[in-house]
Image (cartoon, rainbow, N blue to C red; front, side, top):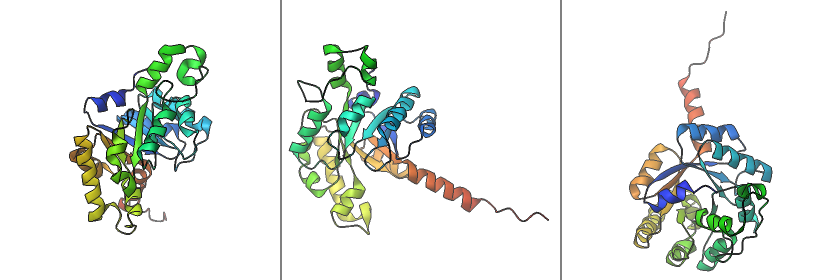
Length: 258
């Protein structure tokens, strides 16, 4: 198993840029690699992927040097399935308590650190070529475990969650946080939401817990990096929709040919 480049960079204090993918499109993943993105978050929470599509997207990411991370669904088996397809890490939504964070680690790591089921016939084990203690140890070391902080309860429990052994990064889900706090109209820009986000960045620094977040475009990504985020994912649907709208609005329609 290859080392997880994103996990290593974050450990060194570096900043990494990725993109959230919600559609089954290997060519888009190839484009991300050629453009120089560090990682792709394959969105199995909101996106539409079958197990085989998920694996092919991961395989494509591997081929162009983009680290594949899966934002898992709420199915209890989703962490197992994502990692068995070859994901280098998981983002787990709606982690609100220390107990839930502990359960995430247990599902993502093999014994003795967790209770992830073992199979050596999967793609990460090269279909049986790898196995035993070396494979299990490398997997436990390389898997990146990211928990979403996206409710007020999670923010209030941040210190307990962030100190759970095995959690590598806390990801602030600003949209869900704003809705959870009752600011559906104002969104993440509401002062009270921003206050909570600012406090999470401060606590993350105090606890040596890297912070990640989402961005709608390059300006928002740079603002997040300036704020101290180490892991920022842009939303591809937003980026593509904006680009397409710009093309249409900036292009002159052709006049009828006489």
